[in-house]
Image (cartoon, rainbow, N blue to C red; front, side):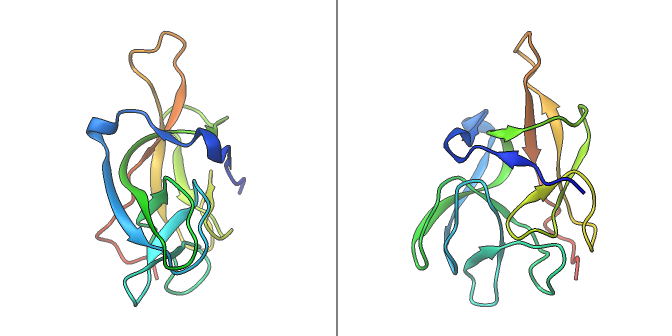
Length: 139
């Protein structure tokens, strides 16, 4: 598995009007671009495909935050900021690395999106279409 590299300062919504963004309270320190799950206290912690209970990737942090801080988090939508070498329509998964996405399955298979092209861009810029399976239990 290769973890996807990102540039936190470039994490941004492609089409804000089409995205679903929630506000979450950080259970841990969070960096922009990290994947999050909702813990038993209802707070956002770092998702991880090889830790029991942390596999339920639900959000992608759109900003960083300290413990107890409220931040905006992408629930569904296309996002810039990742270094993408994968093919168009390639699946993206939660990595075994805490808070990170990967290009293949981790200990558990936790799909979170696919690679898409911006349709109105003649150079076909690749972006992440973040759309985790919210009704599945990956534990």
